[in-house]
Length: 350
Image (cartoon, rainbow, N blue to C red):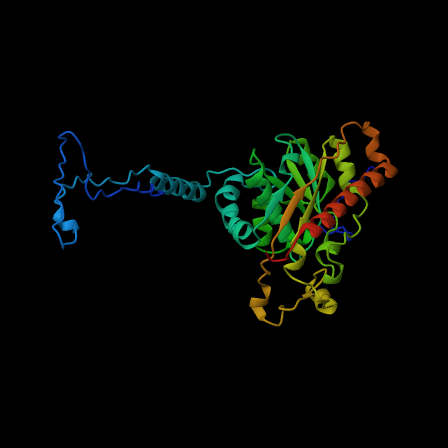
């Protein structure tokens, strides 16, 4: 293979805390024996008279109010934020050769995505222990949802749930890097072009790389075909993993299919705008900007058992039959897990 292979993103080859104030029990009076400091004079009630609390003089011992201890958490956050702004303004921060800005991702972009991940889609993660703590690995996932929110949620899942707090570098389609603003944000988040050279380089550096081989055919499929995997292209991702000897980790995502139920596709408008499809959903474009708000579905992301590739000889990457078999194995494992998760799911939203 003299020419560089492209991992097809789609078949068209597009690419402080306030310390809790300790609960203070206010003593109404303490009774002590043997002449201790607090004395209680017991009074017997007179006949025909009820015993009132006021009849018993009680000496009250009040503990001095405890001031909440300031652990400096707020000051540290303010100082950290100011230092972050200073580095941004002076340019004293680092990005790698792909434009990935780890500091901005951790402190800003992940903080913006996390509420959507935790509170809106309420993502449940399974099998995160199948992701290695170090070294390169290729995560292969299904793609759906009309807009590529599933890739972003998968990034948050790996970063927040993995014990090592690893970062996932996604391979994205060309269209992502042609859109203003989106292009810059994608680069900062660690996304790069879905080509074999970039993927092999990242895997060689020990990075986690994510790819969604269905591409636009998966994300833009009609709602009637939800959770039915589309063709995985020519298996370029398998060839890349074989060359680097890195494991392939299948990933199944349930919940993304229903955020924008695609009931139609305005193909003429899509061609005019240069998009692979123009979705028509029950809310978009009929409700205008409100129709662009995704439905708050409940998500599950499950990482499957790794498929090793380090036992194959170097020339295995050139074997089309082996690539076909491994591609089919990954696809079948993802599809089987999707069906299993769908059977276990009781509700789309709860």
